[in-house]
Length: 557
Image (cartoon, rainbow, N blue to C red; front, side, top):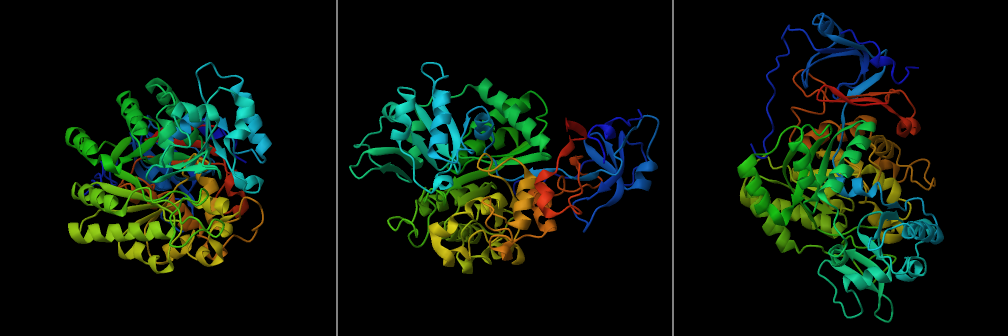
């Protein structure tokens, strides 16, 4: 078995534009700067890996193949013998909330709270340590872990006193506040509901402490903001985490500007080590247009040109928008975060300015509406390479599955959500609607483009957990060893493509990233196991030995 550091000890001395190939010819006979030899290489497009080698010059792959690389090794070439280690293209996560998740690395993590008392104890422990005037912030609580009973402010008041608390459900669509936080936000029984959100109330009309979707803005406005320095430091921690998991690029479909602004600061300081495709709120298209007019579309490290909006909420918070009411709460069909007319108007004008539009849609009514919006915009604005994206594409009317291919809409999916939500989804929507829920294989078999991501911090920033989820679909509770809705499993090659070639296409970079080919960016990962030969149950135990981005080792175990 290859030891983690052994391979490093052998050194010898259009629309949103698709960026063009660099000036590196595959036939060039000049020497390579670094030669990675004896690699079990999957290049991103072959059916299986084979022994090979990679030559790297500058930020790019200059040649591939044992003989081609050998012929270009010179006295100045650094030779790295990988001793048969498995190498594949760098993995790309197509859906992260990067600054929020990076900041959450130092906040209260409630994912392990399997009972209400465990959650309360964690929050109480943090409340005892915060300085006066500071908030307890956190994420990750999941009422379905303890039977579904939703928490309320009384659970926290007895242990937090005057320390304000705001902690989100793991899907980020519902906040739990204590009474101190409600007071600071000015939320009481007389506070009207906000469009696109819900203030959850008890039978007497008093706020319980739960806020759904846009109602969260009522408290977010009074939580002290992190400083730019704090955000940038957190982003660096997130970058280090991503690199340690073999991630070389992330897409950030955001509904605020915090991640984008941090990326502008970090890029001004040099390379960001991890590559980013940054998206900002769809209603703010004019602000992004000004940046494009002044600065272009970015570069290979930080690129922009995408706009993101929400059509609805989440399944777990019962705010995803369905045609029919929820099975376990007949009083609601979910929440429409933005009216269809607004989404259509924004998408029409953003598309005319050649921006890529990505819309979050989960419930079967929301997904249908978004497909209609994309079809209307394509018809009105005429043909072009627009690459609309539906983020999540989670619950679909069966007749809509084929529309992704027909309307050229990319399904941006998160396989881990299927094994997470699959624990309880049938309670929300019943068995009949499940036929179109997390229907990943059906979407792919219809010929649609797709890409994969995590939705970090909703799920781990670890592509291998997502790949394993895609090919096995074993729910986290262990109750579906043969796979939950097993007919929707992806093949291994399909799952890998979602994090490589599919991800590159979704970010307008398919001729730069996602494969190991001459002229492509030298973004690849060295792993401790061959994903093509190990049992699928071991995929999430794979470890990254090294992550090379732009020809440099940005992470080494």
